[in-house]
Image (cartoon, rainbow, N blue to C red; front, side):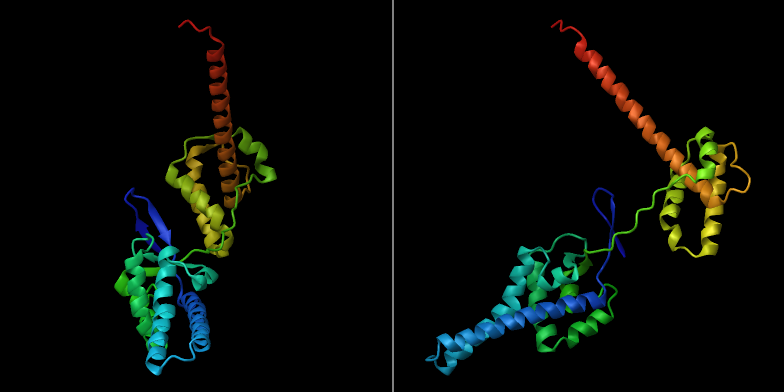
Length: 266
């Protein structure tokens, strides 16, 4: 995964496509282009049987350039880096800064792609991509682009909950202002805990529970596990924040109603 910092100082996490995904998308694109070329060549032979050899060669060369260079360039330019193969593989070509490609980038990729994909039967493209961290082919390197994964599996959303045996304790507990860093680490732990190894999960939960203990009183009932403690505190903290927001909205609405009832003296 690569990180890009925008002009507004926002960090974007972008996932370059793997070599396998790129190869799949490329093979689908090549298949489409070759089938299109074959179909147009058949049409040429059918509609122009009386052309001399020079004219046939000229038209054939034009159709090769059209199907293998011009069409890919036009498709990537109009779709901002998408094609049938990339759509099927869930990919998109973007600039190195994460922005959408333009005609210049698509043209460079198309011209060099003709050499590295068709003229060398994909050998040059494979050789360059295998030794590039983002699986770039030569056309990507020259154009300043790479292939981005757009279909990323959705991560399971895990919400904190209060274990039944801690509901009475946490409802009466005094939860102070937990530092944002501590709250963020604890929340991330609840999201990722199911992926962690048991020993790491227990050790991390104990460490975070120790940090939260400075802001929560009284201590939990004896025998409470660190992970149950985290879940209960985070859940109660979230519920109290939501309750404060609800009350603030109600007060604002009540003030608005009173102002609307005041007589107009203008």
